[in-house]
Length: 505
Image (tube, rainbow, N blue to C red; front, side, top):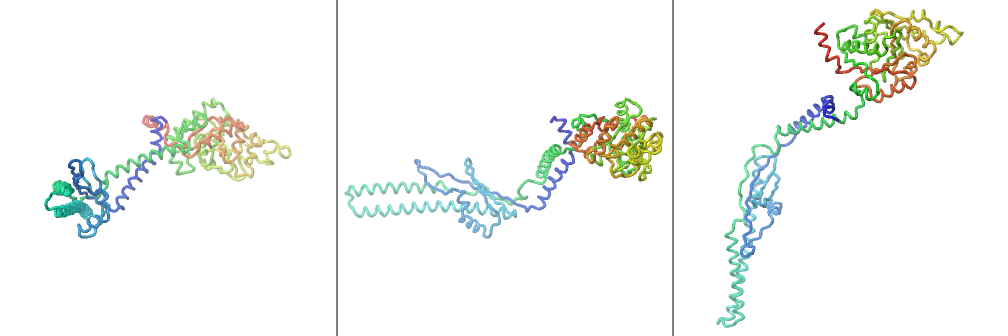
């Protein structure tokens, strides 16, 4: 996918992207409204590394993180704070600076600061107790050595016993080493001190509203773009002229924009009601394309159909017929959709049961024989009598005449062929409003009896597969598909040039 194609897809799906951003930002807002505030306070403790003397460690301290997680320190911190602590504690030690960071997280700012300071002070006190215990232990060892020396001296008052003298010398050396270690421990202290006490935080922990809102908007944008691309891949509906050409290999004869007037009134024909509208200009473009394809030969027979109901084929037939008649040609519109006849309503033509096309093609009917008694097929007088003039000069309608029981058989019978032959002699062009191809077989049976077929597809509604199947089915039964009309387009080539023509009119 090129950058231009990607941009077109994202613009087409802009509503999806906007909704994704709105949802993400709204979720972030809801998070700030519903979340409980959490405050963090931090105290730092400076750790003095153990000193060495002649490569002999003088003091041994427990791992600070192990001590911080112990129940004994929690009890000491509670005692230090003189009350309950409502914050959770965590700690980390920097190996480069020998600083332990004590972080308390709780529902209140004061509680977090109190907890951090209580744990920091409790740890300093615990370290002091560890050092005091080691000093006391050394003192006990020194007392034992003193007692041993005293006992040895009592055994040899004269000091002439070499063995006893050696023991006294050895004990004296041990005593001196212990005394030196005791002095070193005291000199190198303190081994832990509060470097920076915790202060009461002024705002809850976590990112601010602006930052979180910005991140949420960015996440919504990315998610929206991804969703837009997925929807585009899964959407099989036609959305552009290129889709039609790629799907069917047939040309797009015209793109008819959405017509608000027709949407408000089912009997409105935009070419007649608003001849200067974008729709009217697009229909005239369709008329020109058709005249070129048909080489403007009189008596052309064109069937207009669509893949499914609701694509707007009747709307296209009515406007195309009006535009063609308004150019000075004689046009006949045949209401051949027996199941849903609507052309009559568009032009205000009566459609009585058993009249019009139904009467002309019904087996056994007067003037529509050929089945019983060898009576002749519909002739020129019968067909001409069934035509109704409209408010547009040169435009006539052959109504459906109701809903017969077997419409497919009527449209494929010899009487229908005779009607088509007669109609071609009355007008420059005859347009047939045929049923949808995917719904019934009527259009497929009619297609082989006309000059060409125009398929109407609705942008954003007609599926590509349905359009392809429609073209294939029509051509498989002998029909010739001239092209496709893309209806209900939200942008059209007429949009670009129409203001120019109006400004000069």
